[in-house]
Length: 484
Image 1: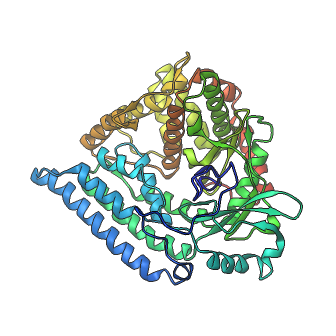
Image 2: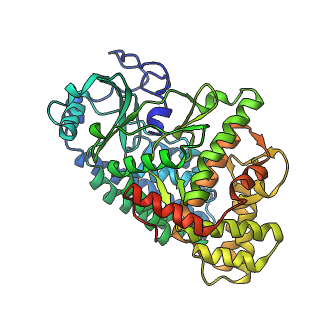
Image 3: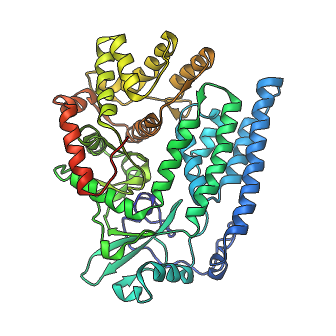
């Protein structure tokens, strides 16, 4: 369940660890008291209007400052304004929070000061009150919903961007995680996608290195999917099947009789945050990284599927260093030809075969490639593929100026501006983001592995025809649409 199980609960304990304690009635003096439950039950329309006004003002100010710096040579205090931006967005729930966090993970999408602040952005808004939770649960499971559980904890185990999780126990003794979607999220997606246009408009005014319309379409498609908990349940079942032979990963089982389109209930997986292991012995950190690598890449190369949100909150670690894979809202299924392009580009870089690289880019959906564009794309590809091209034990990379990949991204960015920009295919968006996100997790772990060997274990016998067959069988089994 992502941040829901892997993050921190209101008491500060790991949601996958000890049972959360009841909250104290008195709020901390340095924080405002959470609104009463009855207030949280009111329509959120007025609050969203105020929020959008605040965000629009903030983003307009950002655009004005960046434009002033670019065209008028004005000196702006970027660190201070970045903090103001983060404070303005700090209480968000919903899709706009997801978009802000996404922008923070893309090297050079925003100036480094803004990226650094947005990386800190988490949902700080209070969870839904108990009276509202009861009403929402009744809408999903019926008025007698409480009778379906032996115990249901009133306090949320965690609050995330699109929903909150409650820990519960079924009558047959299973501990489960119940993720309940916040109200008005369907309407919120449509409204927040309008805000996404504003954010992307700021980017395109800031520079013209990337045409963002396909990026917007891809993000919109994934956000719509994240609202469909019935789809997420099928994604979870798909991952359980794809990874059934992987001893280093665990996927929570969906409890269908306690799930709906806006409620997903899964078995609770005990585990600790990956951050709890950053100072562990090297063999422990490397084993976690090895399990993560296979967790992410086995579905890609065998079934054309990726977990599109590989951040620290979406994994927890068991005592034997095996991985709990959580939250299946953002899953991207690729056409087999796209995965073939991933392998083709690897061989092109390995052999320094320019024509083969062009074939791979075209397979991904890039078009109208000039020689200069190919050079720039090869620069970025060399960074992404660097660890698997290097046959030795090594870290995944280095952190540059606070953001993984920022230095090379800056060079790519400058060259794209110089040559007039590039249109990024939709499929590339989450593939690129997920690779960077996973790399960031490996950096946190300070893992040193022969990534080249790990990669070759998976792709040595790659065959696009076999991938097509395996993928078709899986999609049919779980009633999922074929990628186009």
